[in-house]
Length: 172
Image (cartoon, rainbow, N blue to C red):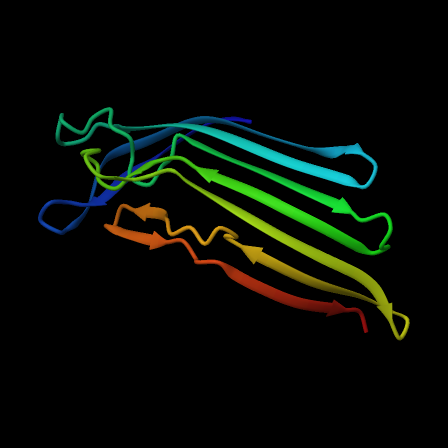
């Protein structure tokens, strides 16, 4: 997909007042692909390029700068593998990358690019004749500390530490 989005630019200024000033224009391209290249393996991947620009700002110094919280690149890759010798068992992995984001409209402060790796498994079976699935996921396997996003309201979001999730679903 190719796109162009324009919206009012709003941010917290040097006087700590949230103001609307000019426009943000986001032009970009994004694509995703998915499929099963070999038996029992499924892949999904996506990539986005975003050319964000501040326009018509009251300060000429910020015209043409990148908007707050808009990375240039984002991409992800996910894979699933059905274990052939254990029917119902599937392993999965995911890699997420988000590029550097500016934390102010002057583009003098930023959060670095970050990567996160997730692993998981699911087991689908029948219990008392009802389809049941057990899942385990480990998000942020490397337990990397990172800022996951920045807002024009002058706050940062801390990425979650290593997190283990367990669940079970069943039809009844």
